[in-house]
Image (tube, rainbow, N blue to C red):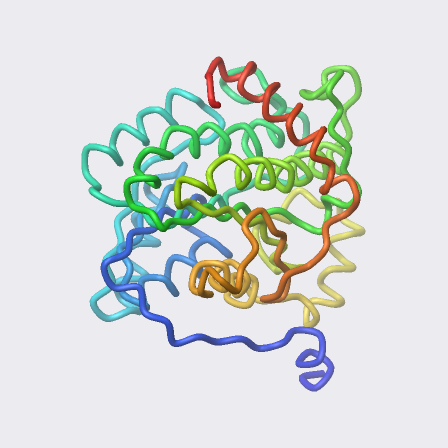
Length: 298
């Protein structure tokens, strides 16, 4: 079993240190986000755990400080399903942080029953794409001030099944949880592509990441048959720590070895689906996202 697993899930490590650097990790109270925050803290970075549930966020911070000697971590409240909460979080960051070198847009919801954000958008599109789009917009000045800096957006292999339904972005006409999830993950790839084009001259780079198939709580909405299958093949799933490898790779790898706007999987550059390379769709999604959020982002 272990031999098979080692062939499927390659090991990766790096001794790069991040003393003096500051990172924000959304959804850092559990799973890949928590393991990412723990790793960055172990490298000496100051890490802000951006979490919807503050009790869980503070517990995660205590866990990391117990496990990592000298860890500099703090939990801050952020509900990506509410633009007011995103604004309040950004205000808190500007009030308390002098620099921001890494914005890791990790939080996400997957294949959930239909629901909407506080602002009326379908939950998966609203949180996975619009919430992180808005957060990045609000924090861009601090990222520019701290350049060289990086934005890392977690996508998924599911983006290959995605299509941006511009005539029904919030799935009001026809909702399917898997289709809505795939759309949001394709949106992450397209956002990264367009963002990179716009901010490269500012000293800020952007990357999208496929963490692989990871055993995390994000699968809690899977139907019973899929849960049974996933348990049967659990030994082939990545642990949350292994799922964090590619995110961390995109943090620590020297910039000349990286391609801004690129898509990364298993700690290497990878190809997106054709839909993820469509600059026209990326530009249209950017414009529509700005319109929905009521912002002007040139």
